[in-house]
Length: 391
Image (cartoon, rainbow, N blue to C red; front, top):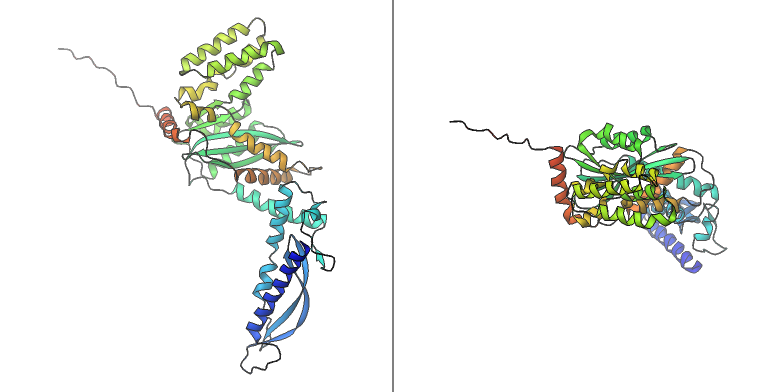
């Protein structure tokens, strides 16, 4: 491997030598028409294999004394090569302290630099700042989003609330993130307001899938108003109800909950949920109260008539859970969190890395039915009054 890297270095040096000869002609052959001359040598470095490697560079000047930069040297000196190498390695679990162990060997006779902990850290900070800027400046007015999945992830003493959009083609995209101490109303409202400012359209209706956060529910109402229909995450609701029950009672309650949410109509689903709440009222009033809280919004996808396959995607916040897990995995080596800006940088890096592997949601062919249902809810047709005709 070291031989391969050294061979690559020789190739770079040969490319620079050929460029010099193209500019000034072969060495030792006088050419009265030449427009440039060699002007000695100097030490330089190129980016190779995730590090800086020392090279000897020939200087070239025009006949009137101006320095002529070598395009080959400039290309291999591009600092983004190192920045990208540091970003990719650290996102995939290599720490700044162990960065050098993830690089190809170059041999002891090659002088290298740029692999210290501080140098790698600086490059990673620069790269993640660009990722955060890219994420937070995305325009959202070039696509029609039918659903918004919002969830929070705790990182150290900070909570990052993220929004994932699902467009008419079933494609998922991270739309934005916001940081705060908790998932409070201010943080949630800040995120949603930012999405609107960047062009998110909700005039024709949008389905917003959230957990049981009251702060998030209030923010959705304040920012989107009547154009947003809220679907409470059934997974979160199930978990909250079961936490109020002893172990021996959980299995049958779980079956009843899932059976209720499989009903074809909103009326049947709510009736089944209310029967279950009544059954739990005396023995476990806490579970009954948890079930009744926001019950109607756990069946929004049923009320909209969303077909079963697409309903499975939109009934919970699971669509964003894989992205949350990627953020946790990417940031697992961070030992000391300094501030909220650092948290946002790492979160942006993780979410955008997860986005690369997003797939089309299950049931995407049924999205036109959801679009039609949203439109009818937001723009209901006035009912025609039957006028009796008297003779």
